Image (cartoon, rainbow, N blue to C red):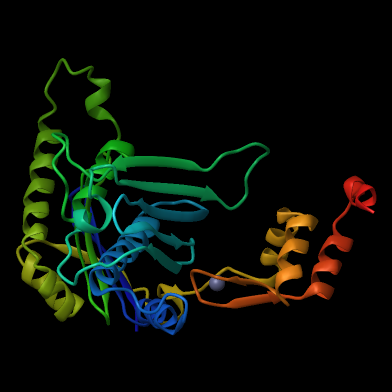
Length: 327
Ligand SMILES: [Zn+2]
């Protein structure tokens, strides 16, 4: 079963998390494989999307925010788009748009950053918005400060966390066809003591805390993908941090664990069809029996025939001034 473990380093401003997505991840892959339009993901795409999924769950779990966290890559290679959405209850869904062939050994840049134009976006979309409120979005490139292409997706997100959240973060991510897993180590904000001093005096405590983070981050970065995919959480934490004092929280497993869930519904698709307009939908129905809409996230197919369509437009409020002119 999928699980999320949180821990603190006793007395130090450093926290960590490990996520292991088993059923939550394999359901995403199985639904994709069952989609006759797309077929299964190429292995390299699957592994990248798995890393993104693990990372998005870790990020959602590390913020106090009542809304969806959406992690996206806009690629300029065969992977045009990859999206992971995680709700505050850690329900997750993910999908990728793949156009063209992706080799098994393809690197991140081969898939999504061929001409160095790829971007990664993190969107926080509040559940309850006030009028006119836009979701918060931060965007980082898929290259480093000197334009070098980043081949580990974790580096992209470490960049994002430093830039947008001003949080030093170390991530190790790995995925295969059965498991998507991640380790996050984060330096907690120290309450702005350094800022108040105006940079004139040196805060010795602050330096000490930074050294603690650096030591722990260095230990974390020695974790290999293979270890993350094959070892249980107790073993991983013991191997990395046996000299540190860890305070572990109760694992989020079972009902509280991250899990797959799609938020699509017939009602949402109805609204989408309504927004297409009566003419466009009429055109589609003059050529085929149904308007068919498939959900990219879960593969659910929604079909609306002429009777359904008539109801959708009948039910929509307000006059439809143009339709009378057509006759
Ligand atoms: Zn769906």
